[in-house]
Length: 149
Image (cartoon, rainbow, N blue to C red; front, side):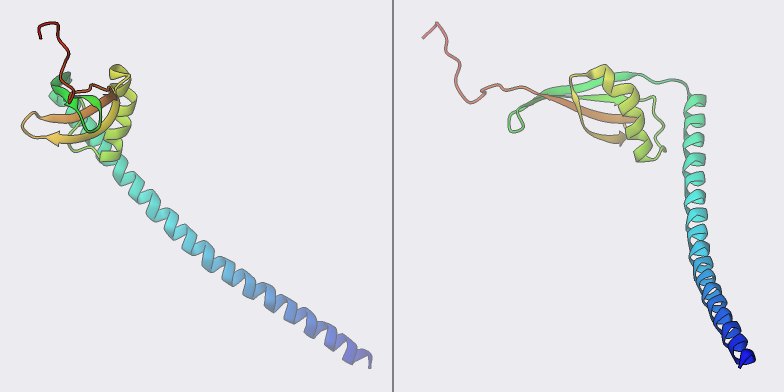
């Protein structure tokens, strides 16, 4: 009877250890998946940073840039005064997210209170065309009242 009890206890212990091993195998599987995903993400980030550094290096070798207002006007539908600048001190082959970060940190504070609308790279101007605008209401449809009539 005592042997049977010991045998039952050993069997229960063995089943518990089997469950723990099974749980550890599953956890190991998920950890391997997570590790693979993190490795992939790291490789993508390394590639992005390598491209960004290369773009900035090429830009630095080509010289500094400047900001030139290409055009400005009034958009009646949006009720805004807009300006389009040529920004030449950002590399053309920089990732668009990086371009927006650089614009936000360097260019946009200098044109406040104008706000960012859009940006495109122009091969004609060899720079980024950055459109900014600020709200301004002009009642363009009402004829002006004049003292002449």
